[in-house]
Image 1 (cartoon, rainbow, N blue to C red):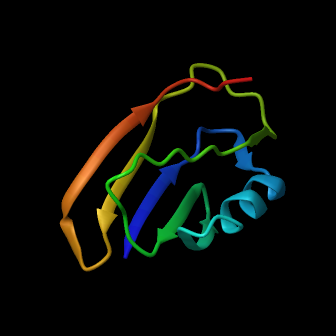
Image 2 (image 1 turned 120 degrees about the vertical axis):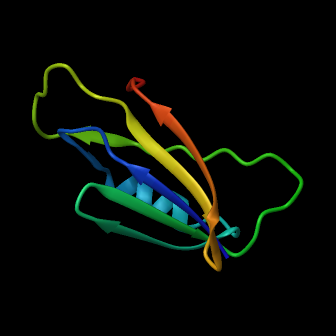
Amino acid sequence: MVIIEVSLLSGFIMSSRSRMLLENRTIVKKTEVKANVVYIYLEKLHDESQTFILQLEQVIQVKNLKPASIKIYDYYQPGGLQISYCSGVGS
């Protein structure tokens, strides 16, 4: 099992529509939202590229946003961690 761990930007939450769209994908086993982190559980990864889009809602205006992190790791071997950063919000 693979986990995608997305730290949300300060002042934002994931929309309920976004969660529903993620969970309707066959590759997604389940999603969890805890505090300001979204966990996306995948059965497994394949050789083909995957794109995940999270729709966020701004609930609080925050100045000087810091980058959020996205971590991808194997549930059974979390040591092989991949980290990238997202600093902007698309429209």
